[in-house]
Image (tube, rainbow, N blue to C red):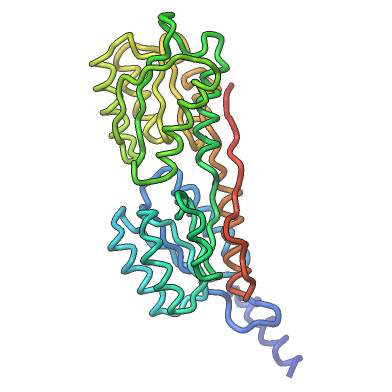
Length: 319
């Protein structure tokens, strides 16, 4: 029998067919991946790396686009449940939806790894009531906000371009319901005040992580406040790239008469940092996070009980 199996596998390989073999197991692990929306810059890098890494481990992966609609994503999760996937990896459209999603996956006995948007931030004790096959893999957004503020505080003029003794800033917010946006907004400014810097908020609006909205909001703020703007903080690099377009259109120059910071360290933004066209960004490690999420998902699919929260550090990126 063993010889027969060896001959069959050899024949398939000669025929050029892909063979996925899981030692001591039957079928490969089926992973359903729900992403909040495909056209998010950071989550595009994340999902591509996640799928590649999972497939390199022999998993069968299906990735779906929630299109920024929680109802749509809930339907997708129900479809994966009906399909009988072995494990789910979910980037919730809304963090608050965890209360509804977790009972669904528990009833179906499908282990689930939540990524990128942490639930229960305001009340960590909620984890004690959650099924032990659900966990979160991400990063502490307070750290990313703090690093943004420190990048500005570490500048020779501490962010006070116009020399009036105050850092007058614009804040372009991702999604106020998202804890990452909340913490990046709060802790970027806290880092400045903790450093003894006086601050003044000129303008703060939501940009929904979107580059076009970032451009529009920055243009509005610059038209309204002009040379008074010292710094534009953006909760992500996508919106910051939009803001950069408006900064240039307004005749301003990053590093000379205005500063600009984002989060994610998208490859094009890192190049802009190196070229002195961007003050700084914060590496949101999509490789480290996606690999950790994949490893944990495969482990829980195999019967392991996970820890509740796994975090991957952010890193400051400046020239």
